[in-house]
Image 1 (cartoon, one colour):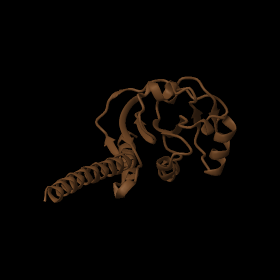
Image 2 (image 1 turned 135 degrees about the horizontal axis):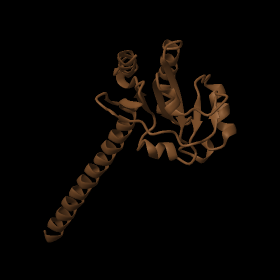
Image 3 (image 1 turned 180 degrees about the vertical axis):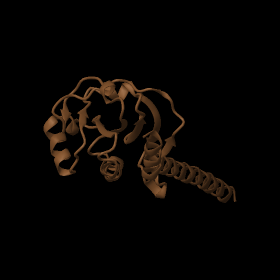
Image 4 (image 1 turned 60 degrees about the vertical axis):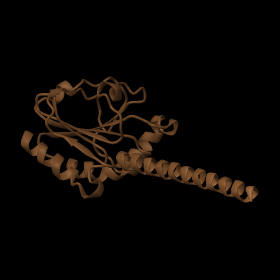
Length: 196
């Protein structure tokens, strides 16, 4: 009889241990899903007003000379922090290109800052190939040392800033512009329109 009771207690303990590990696994899965959703999900801030940091020097693509933010006064600047292997950046790129086409001929300048996440993204030849492959026409600053990333206190790819004609950041969008039907592209366009 005591053997049966002892066996039952052992099974009860093992059952509770199994329940504990099942709960732990479920929490880990939920946390992983939540982190993935957070990275893809977007958040907008349109009530910002602070001086945009000037660019740290670096190699530029799609322009004959380095671009200085101070010389872009009189234009609304759309600043796109990205990296070419990031899937969320790839999902956002068509929206950025759409904004660039929509406002072409207006006082709007789209600029990309490529801050690499992986060692493969560091060589200029790899970035140049990605720019050609993705048909990127706007100027792109290679930010291998992350100086510009740090000046803007960046944390996530992609991030889009809207800078007014006087050089002040007026909006920021973190994450994919159109993730989950949030219509971030339309919100960014609306903010740009209000600053023209």
